[in-house]
Image 1 (cartoon, rainbow, N blue to C red):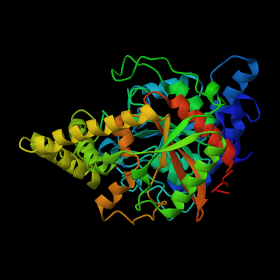
Image 2 (image 1 turned 45 degrees about the horizontal axis):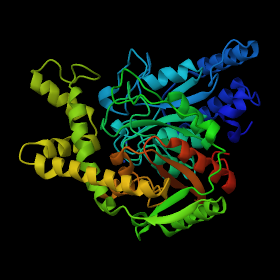
Image 3 (image 1 turned 180 degrees about the vertical axis):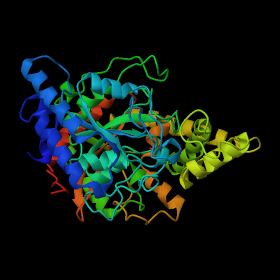
Image 4 (image 1 turned 90 degrees about the horizontal axis):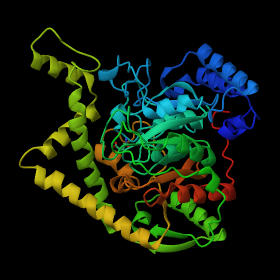
Length: 481
Ligand code: GLN
């Protein structure tokens, strides 16, 4: 049993059993505690008992669940009934939801096994997982480096075989950037594709849940399972979910791929650029046609995102007042003191920074100058993508401007940290789907390539990604071996 055997395909074909897979993950969880990928873990005995039960059900033909016995991690901002959901924040340190998020319900309904709740940046705010109240996650490829964020625990768990797959959430890059840093496949679906019911809100108009997996096929299978309309989330869209997996092999000859010139400036690490260009060569050989396209507003995407996301966050996080959820501090004093103490002690530094930024840009006198202006910029960004998608089927780009950085390297300068999101935030602002998949190793660290599609065109992204993956046949080594 190898890390590469941790796929839905091998499990459903019976090439490995759930018990083999789950024992592999459990053993790795026990041996690699220093990676700090889990905030809470299902007890090993429970996992193994569930795995045995799944194997038995399969043997008897009792269950047809598409994920029967498949061991997964869930980012700790998705509600799990009876299991602590902290959002990596002290303020939710004791929060045990009494319901499952829709995505969790769907995974359980298909027979998936939940190994634990993955570490993350507090309230999903960050690009390095250093903002967690439960400690930093280490990158399995180099333990001195960050795994990316905010779904750092989810991506590192999959990369190191501490889970066979994971769910993450992406508001400005939080699935794709850690997927790139950890050498795994991460999909941020179209806004509205996946229900957000039970996902703790950061910036509701941008948040989207997506799968993090070892390969593109598993990713497509998982997205098929978690997608679809949910009456409990009014922003989830009621349009059919295509059979992503069935479409993977469809020829990509003649498909038009756009290269956005603004994404290949001097800001991009030249080795990452080389990696992306190698992927383009492969896609050319497969018959895809390339054209240069322009997204001139790209340079305003970071300021636009860092006005809009904190504005929404400041409003969403107002509910953590020590009354309705989580931890309460100094409850015997007067109400205002109690709020003050609870929020001062409960939130970490970055979360407080975002609340202050958001409150400021929404306040009267500054609303027009910041919030409204950012909304107008977002509209232009959306329109630019729409224009580009009249000419091309898909856009290819880097995921991150740099290789995984060292723990502590960017913590002193928030702006420097925010710049790691330069190639990912526009996609969220435009509500588009995009995947990050590994395209090489540089100095022993993985690099990712991003494929961006038009709204609800995840099928095209998966086709291109799958065929690129096959042709590249990277066979990345197991970082934990
Ligand atoms: N790094 C970005 C931020 O800190 C994106 C986070 C996310 O996608 N959740 O806001």
